[in-house]
Amino acid sequence: MLLNLLITTGLLFGIPPLCRRLHVPTIVGFIVAGMLVGPSGLSLIASTEVITALGKLGILFILFQSGSEMDRNIIHFQRHRAVVYGLYSFCFPFALGVVAGLGLLSLPWLPSLLLGAMFGSHTLMTYPIVTRYGVQKTRSVSIVVGGTVLAMTLSLLVLAGVESQAEADFRWQRMLLIPLVVGVIVWLFPRMAHKFLRRHTEPVSTFLFVLLLMVLSAFLCEEAGLDGILGAFLCGVSLNRLLPSRSSLMRQVSFVGNSTLVPMFLMSVGMLCDVRVFAQGWQTLLVALVMIGSKLAGKWLAAAVVARQWRFSATERRLMFALTHASSAGTLAIATIGFAHGIFSVDVLNASVIMVLVLCTLSSFITEQTAHRLALQEEAHMDADRQEERWQLIALRGSEAGLRELATAAQLPHADMLCMKEWTDIQTAIEHQTCSMAVYQEYQPLNTVLRLRVIVPRYAEKERDFISCFGFVRRLSVGIGAKVIFYCNQDGEQVLRRMCQREGKQLAAEFVRMNEWSETEHITGCLRDNDMLVLLCSRPSTAGYDPLFKDIPLLLSRNVSWHSYAVVYPEQLTGEWEGDRF
Image (cartoon, rainbow, N blue to C red; front, side, top):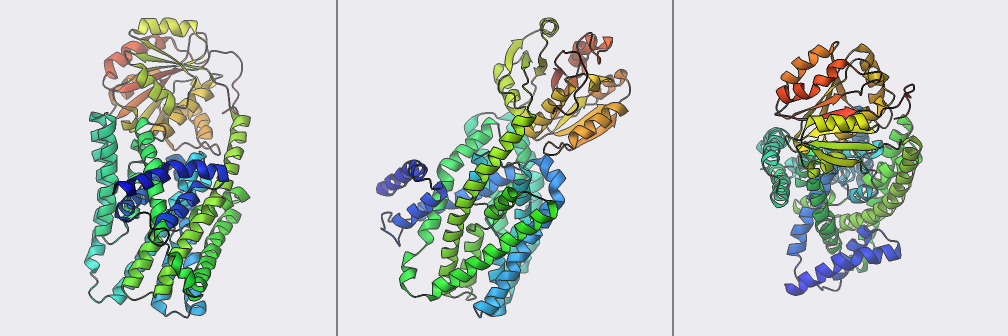
């Protein structure tokens, strides 16, 4: 046992630097390492049960991470495209799989349908590469992630139908559990997590709680007749808002997953590949060649049609194709079940393992190159559009740790941070500073805030640096996954709606009409649990200043003492507002 652990730990440590030296994606390195040390290779690892168990946890993590890192704003604006791409990504490979099974492999109808289900499904194997390059929230990746759940569900439904034909005592009663299980994962688990994370901030307990929900979701889905990876994905989607990508909790989850669980899964995939198959004749290799070609053609066709329909770039098309043609857990599960019921022959089972190895390797190379290219394009776009903003964050009777969380969520890495105890000191600092400022009082952890209620006074949109204040709200909303509700007059709403619909920086927000500053008293008095107030204010002698602003400290202490809030002051400059800066 200790020898197995020593070899495994050595591979976890040595494979990444070796792959970087050889310019090979680490995914390929871990799969090949699994082949070499596994039962069909050098047999250096006597028992693979531990690696298989951790590998199962690894694939659950990949799907969980892809769901938890989806940008809800992009999904909101791209949801129709995600559904369409999910249908294309399943239907085209499914049709080619059925045709290949009937025509090229001379299989009966049931095996051909099951073969199509294998081709229609895909696993986001190379998603960690996308995360490493920071392009996981681009529209192409968001559409793929959003369409994944539909493609996986359709494949599993085909599997259930084929099972019902092949197994006389197949119990459809289990299928009735699916709505109940989905409801528990999507509705109950987020509420449980929200209450837990509000009361507990200790890193170990919060990490283990999230891990428990992920595994429990997978278990419940398997009990309902679905694959566990679908449960992990749904759990990630349901906890998306509570796990901001820049939060300390998500960094812990990602560290454990990417450093241990995902490599274990990749090695377990390599161990499944029996290299002795190559010496047993050409039949298995021919079947594998047909399967690989059919699936690649179907996934490429889906990406090409979507890219042409919505005018995506060639880089986005290649990345969508790269993410969706890799297969692992879902494909192997379908192949194993088909073999157990006598639907697939041993040649198809071995060919499925070869297909998984080849497609994972090919996908990792294409994803590595394309994600890097897309990251450079995104960086160039940001450089051309970025404003050098100088912010000062002030914590009112709070800690610097809370300010760091706020700066991380709002993407203000270079902000100056101060802690003050009284509003009189803060007002003095505001009068003597001209940079953008935010006064923050923390009542609950940022990742447990459900709604940002943003008050935009009359003429606030006339401020030259109003666009930076909007950017602060948008980035904070994305960072913590909170819903945004703007309270503003008609002129402010028109400006904000244009900002919310800007390409690549969309914000799904609601608007409530507020005509007079006197209405602020009513709004602050009606805050609900898990609301955070954001008040866009102005300094004296600026376009948006109102003499009543001097009463803001009294208003906040009277009505908002049991909520988190931020009072945001734009940079004090003169001149006209530049509406295309953000």
